[in-house]
Image (cartoon, rainbow, N blue to C red):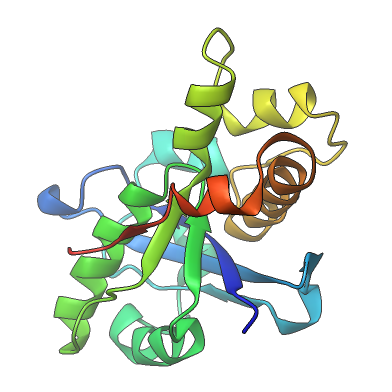
Length: 185
């Protein structure tokens, strides 16, 4: 059976959910049979129910007015979890997103995700030890013309391209699977 990889990214009100920061955008793009499946992607803005600090808006451009009247996380997270299913979650620095998903699960009253995950940041740190590991720099290093914008869908798209490049030109599928870990929340 072919593995379904789901490249995920979020944008948040800050970096620490333990201090009240929350998700305000989620995007996921499947990679199946060596193809990015944009037609099956998931994207949603989320009303985080907390104010977006001004300095955070300067990073991703999302303002409070952009997410006003959008669904709240507990309304969409159960559907997102069903969408994820048992795919292998992929992301650049994905552990942070997974921690936010744990908070989203608690807030939604559902069990947390327990999928396997692969962190492209971890892989690039190992195979390019002397390089910057920012997604934008890795994309340039791999000659990927797309640029991350600090918006969830754009960054998921660039990460999907980085992921495919890694498995086509840098690392074999068996080696890639050695980076797969089970999320235990």
